[in-house]
Image (cartoon, rainbow, N blue to C red):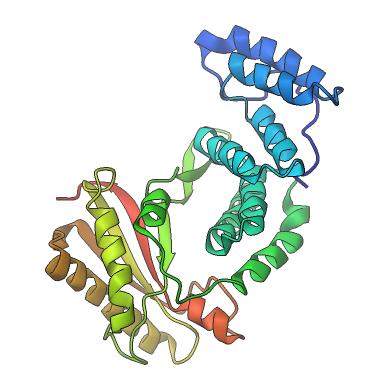
Length: 302
């Protein structure tokens, strides 16, 4: 899907302020020329971005070129920039997932694939013909493939937590311009508890320390955070909802008491088994579903 270059733009097919409209129109002309080029394609696309830095189609095509030439970090940078500029551009999430999977960053790749699927679903619900529905099955398969490679015991670093919690809000707009948040900045972590209990196992204390360091960092120190507990499918709905709530509260208590984070900045929710991220049919899938999600819900922390 996103391995194919985007075609000719009819009109101003990008985000651009009025002050730069003329430059962006010139950029469209260069962009359309780039589609017929082979040897000078990358140079022309770079010139497009010089004229119009928010030209997402040019960025996407540069990302595709970088992938094809084995420059995965360059491709990752382009895809992340697209998401920053236009968070409802599905190919950027699909492409980012592919690049991260190649680099062995399976947890991040899974998040990108899941975001792609959420976004095309949200667009379909609004009746927006995105043209990407036909790729749902293949990217669902890619998601499941990288999930099988995730090690639930691997620690997520402070840097990675911070990056996820300060990422762009993924949102769509309807024909009236009304914004609908599909996913706020968040990160899933596999905090280990004793079976059927809210007792955090010692092996997960270093992971919570990484969370605390991230939440105390300058970019997150004033944010409110929702802590969501999730379980696998074993047990009743009521049992799992209660268990997930108790686990989320325990994480809140640890962050407040052991790391001096204000308890008032946290919201706590027990989601139970209602929002799995992987199949409950496999041990690894169940392990991924037993998670705690930290969600950045905006300013207001103390």
